[in-house]
Length: 220
Image (cartoon, rainbow, N blue to C red; front, side):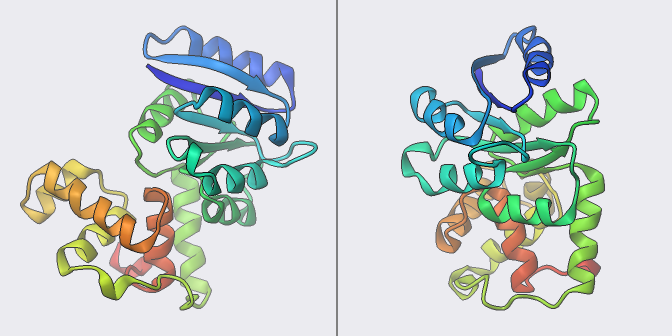
């Protein structure tokens, strides 16, 4: 059962999401919050698998709530998915750097939202296709921040290869096929790389791969 915390300052939006999620056999909405402060309290109380968080909220906004969740070891199991009307670049990059596992816009179709929740619950990075394209385009036009990505030299060649494939959006099974290894070995390479790079999840691994120069848009 995937346990979800809904966080949005609009009750009607929360009701709509709850109605969609509650009919699924493998998804349970465990709590609702109207702002980031309440979100943090409920996350610590319920320890959900997924926190579905809006950005624009009173008291504490969604990006700051994400940052605090990511910084709390007690909430390590909580995967944040940002779901908002605002697909602006700065929101995207700030949310990912804060520790979000994914970023979706609210015009997503219900089937894709359900898929997104299941993907994020597995620990996989998740971005809407339109946002992925902008993420890549951003790294075409902006110089790399070489201050990030420290620790890449600690990775083995196979770990670096696995990280590069994660940054291209491949699943563990696809990475295993590409590297001609088992899915379990692929997952081990990725987990070890995340540990060495201090990445909370695959989304942060993607950001680090681009910002360090390990992966560039022309490689994808």
